[in-house]
Length: 345
Image 1 (cartoon, rainbow, N blue to C red):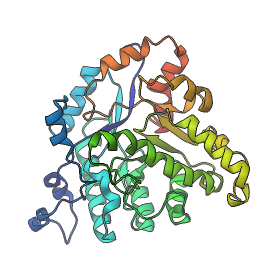
Image 2: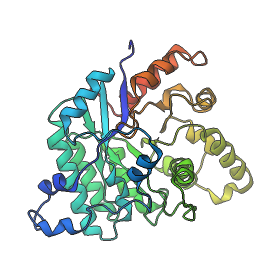
Image 3: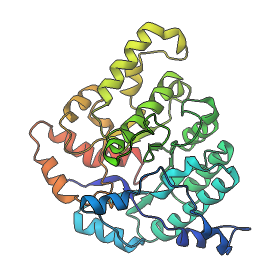
Image 4: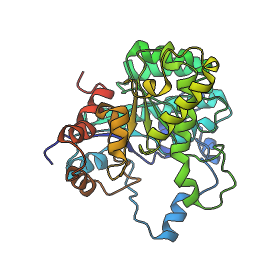
């Protein structure tokens, strides 16, 4: 492929027995911890069991950096930024102290096993949002000491929306560090459709609904006005909902602007103003419409590997699209992700 491809959201299947090695005292070496998962299950669906029944292809790769490095070589991808899988349920942890311990151990593991192994393997820090001051401290440690690219906002299960002033210490620290805070969903519980009994219904809505809920809060509560240098991203939700949310927010703001007193411009202008980046699936038919609304500089490419194994062929099909400019393709596959994570700086 001619374009230098940057993957802004890959994954691992992190295992408790590996994170265990990086726990700090008094938890270090205490094998009774294996009686329960380190991170709560995200909801009531066993995704692997469903894939077996549906006969859907899936990659279960060893949890090691050598495998990821081989994937980059094989698929023609220049760099990746790796996210957790089980850790995306961190918001469901009730014990704030354990959340801090588990997140620190995960971050130590990623720095030691992945970042040090290959400079092409990046990572973002898992943050214990149950204790926001500790989250800010952990973000600082992760960026300064562990050489991570930023921190994950995994809000599913937590009892506050991301626009709440509770999160201000974390936003302030991220702005000071100049690092991004990508928003990543996965769990469906608590998003308003807990009555669904099939995974196909849940997966249709879970990622975009989580993003719409929290971006509505972030925009209308004035987070981007209070922190004008803060960078966030909407990951793994695609881009087709973006025009809808922009129009809906503008409509409500036109009717009820006194309820969003911090805003100095329309909500859609914040969404397209450069502080929010958006992941897009390469096949999405409405991608040109999303680009028209937010600009080609704010769209990111992500492999979602190993959750989604089809990489190189998807990129080739994307590069062959006739409804996108060459500059948009290059920016989505490479330039935007490089800029968002400040790679090479």
